[in-house]
Length: 152
Image (cartoon, rainbow, N blue to C red; front, side):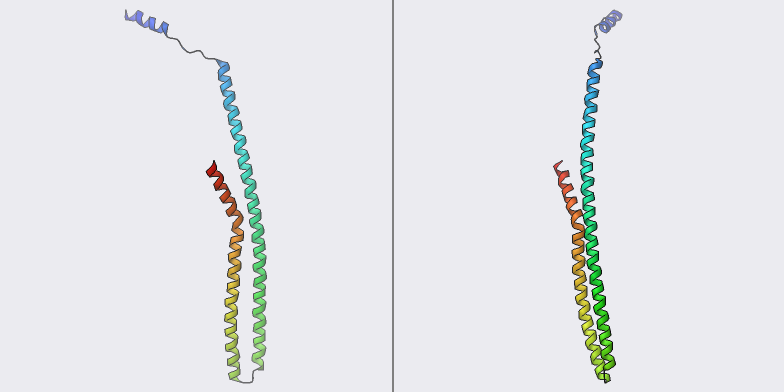
């Protein structure tokens, strides 16, 4: 009896039918969705790469400008120091006494220390401006990217 009951149960079980056209439609929809997502990802990647390139170009131009400014300032400082040294040497040669030499030397050293402090301040100002100018494009691009990530 249990044998007939099992046979009856198997005969009453219905297996779902497989419709190939529905499967094809689902695969097509899945593929289309994947292609669309790939296009969106590519567009975002392309935009990000273009923005990064612009930021790097801007950074390079800023660095180039700052480098020129720093070179000009360095040459100017070297020229001023050389002229001061030659002028001091002429004054020492024209000195009449040892006390005059000591007085000239003391005044020269005091002026050179003051000039060095001023030159250091100028270089520090240029370096600070340089750091700010060079990092600004990258900082702006990074902040923009972070905002876009937060939005997404």
